[in-house]
Structure formats: C-alpha cells, structure tokens
Image (cartoon, rainbow, N blue to C red; front, top):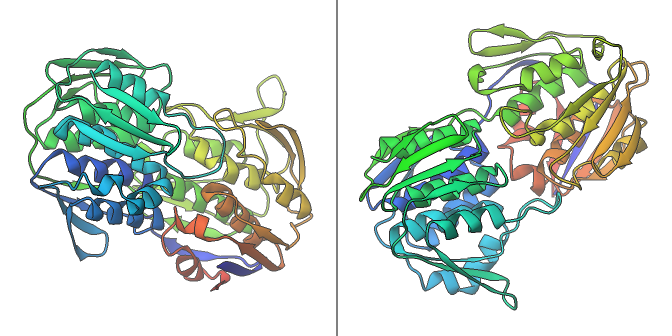
Length: 434
C-alpha cells in the first residue's frame, strides 16, 4: 500500500493522540501473569498491537473486545505446543514486542520459547539485557542457531540484585514481570524508568505485586505467590504527540492536541521549543499556533545546538526523526545526534532529494541547515523504512507543495492508528491506495 499526498496545505483543528503503543506491548504481555481476567483500556488498534493480541489468542489467552480500545484478557491455560509451531514462529518473528512474553511465561509456568523477534530495521538491538537479568533470577537459556530460537526454563526463580548494563525498556519490563512471582526480593539498578515502565509497575501493583521505587531507576520487588485481576488504562502515546507538534510546525498550521498527559511527556515539548516551535499549554492540551517562521536556539556561548537522545528522563530516540524534519524548515542550524541506533538517520537521503540541506556526518549524526520556509521541500516518491522515519517523511510530504507518494506504509500502520483519516479531519489531502 502507499499514500498519495498533495502537500503544501495549512491544516487546522483538534486531534486526540492514541493510546501508547510501547506501554500497550508491555501490559498486554503482563496479562499472562494471572489466570484471572485483566481489562485494559485505551489500547491503540495498530498492526503491532493487533498482531500481539492475535499471538496471545493463539497461545490460549481468551480475548474479548467489547468496544473500541477496550479489551479483556484471561490467560487460564497456555498451549505450549503452539509455541513450537510454524505459525507462532512466523507471527512472533514479525514483532519485536513478542520478546516480552518470556518474563511472564517463565515466572508463572517455568518455561518459555521464542524465535528471534523482528521489528524495525534501525540497527542492532541486542537481547542480552533480557537474558542476563533472567539468568540472574535463576533461568537457564539455550539458543538454537539453526532455528534462531531461544528456550528458557526456570521453575524456581529467586530474587537477587541485578545491575543492568543498559537501561533497556523492554529488558527492564521482562525482568520486572519475571521477578514479581520470584521467591524473595529482587533489586534492579539502572532500570529503565520511562512512563511505560511506571505504568507497567502501577498495573502489576494493582494486581497484587509488591514493587517500590516506581518511576526511578532503582526498583525493589518483593515476590508474591499470586497475582489477581485488575483494570488498567494506557497513557496517550507521547510519540504521537511529538509527531503532531512536528506536523503543525512544518505545515505552518494551528493544531490543538487534546489530553496529552503533559507530566509524562518529559523533554519532548522543550526539544521542539529549542527549534523555535511555540507551544501553548492549556490544562492537559497543547496548542501549536500558526507560525510562519521558527528559529533554532543556540547555546549561551553561541555554539550550534545539539539535540541528542538519551535514556529517560532524556529525550526519546523515537522522535529524533521528526525533530530532524522540523529542523529542515527552521531558521538556523542544529546537529542531531542519534546515539542509540546506527541506522535511523539513513532516511535523510530522501529529505536531501526533497531539497533539504543536510550533512550526514556518520551513521549517528546529521547537521541540518534550516531553510526558514523560504524554500519549501519538493514533492517526491519515497519508501518508509521504519515506523518513525515513515511518519517523518509523511510530515515532510505534507509540507511540500505538490504530489508525493510514500510506499511501504504498512510500517507506519505498525505505530499509528488510522492516521490518514485523522489527518484528513485536519484538512490534509492524503489518500491510501493499494
């Protein structure tokens, strides 16, 4: 499928962010920790989440979908034979979030099996943090190099002290979910502390877990014997919020983003403000007023601004692609430093084709010389390489007067729900075609 976009039009209106994708991936896997029914609200109905729900259904979880965004999950029994099937291999290999079923299955049943998971092609994403942490709890791993699959066993997990070499979000989530049913006390230092992890811990505590230090990088988990039912609501997706801020800036539009959960956005608003984008905060809404120009800030000594990703509470790497696109039409220059993944900046060749002034210094750094909206980007035909770069290219296309085509929009669908229809409601000229 592809998008056809007639860009260069100003947009206006109000848009609601979907539920947080990365949080939903974690809390859906956490439903495996109990035989009782878990209700989860504000689930984004995007392809990655739908695929994970299908995967849970196939392994034996009873799933109901009473209304949009609301699901219930009852994991009374698990079909471990299905874990070895070709169907499971194919489905889980397409979804990197499937790796987070390991911790819950190991904690509750003492066994898990997983083919090497897939996901974005944005660079190397090792699973070492997951496996090292689970091994310290007492799990044993074996890797089948022929089938590229992992078998994990450990019926008597025991709490321990774990110092993570990397503050991996999914790694931290997996270890937490394994530790909540382990015997004794587990301490996790250098834990990821993104809002997704905070939400997971809040959900687990509402199920009867005993987790303290929630929201910090030092978690203490006292294992319990049983977890029970609960109801949980996902936060709005901070990456969508940032994407819509970037869209408004690039198209010179006035857009209101409703119910953003401002305390959970971290440095995202200030990153756009450093590029000169004006933001108005109205209770829990963000209004981006129409701006003809926005100027990149510089450091106090006058040197060129650098925007870099970092583990939370630093700036999320998922928004650097959007910030980079916004910088192409700013006044001034900025260095974008993508530290965590070495392939995420390779999409800039498409922006250069569109007339952006970008120097790709190396796989991790790009210098952008803003065009100050004096020379709009040119329409072109391009392909979405991953979720976030795909949306960044879509924002660029919506700002470029004329017709652009974006292929491989299935990548965008993995992270953004019904995006073309929601953008049409703002006045965008965008058509989805087979």
